[in-house]
Image 1 (cartoon, one colour):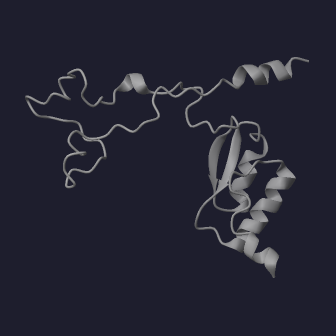
Image 2 (image 1 turned 90 degrees about the vertical axis):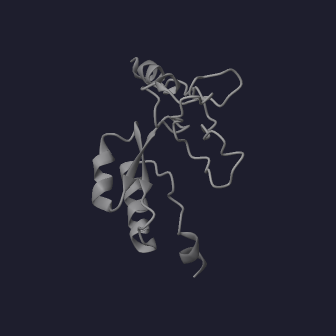
Image 3 (image 1 turned 180 degrees about the vertical axis):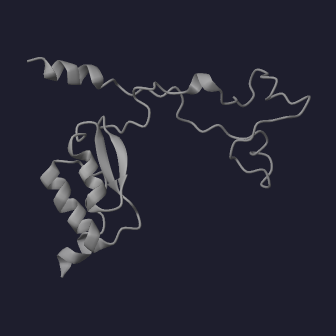
Length: 137
């Protein structure tokens, strides 16, 4: 049937309008002014007034396509998993979502999650983390 065509239509190429971070006005000049973005509020500020050659300000036009927002390069979206039970949610959604094991999950629980993910055919983004130490023993 036409399932492969439908999948191809869903898999839209991810195109970001901007990958560089917006940096704060005069953060290159002073160490006390950190580069994390803050909107300039001054009455004479040339960045706020959008003069040519100044830093660009973030606005809604830089937003990414809602169909591809938060999409990984493989076309899946991330789903954070803390235990095996939370992995079961992805049973029917394994074509859309990849599981990512939370950072505070122990090596023993990770092993169980990885085994269950293989049974459910769920892709893991960090499936081989903290498994190396146990293989050496």
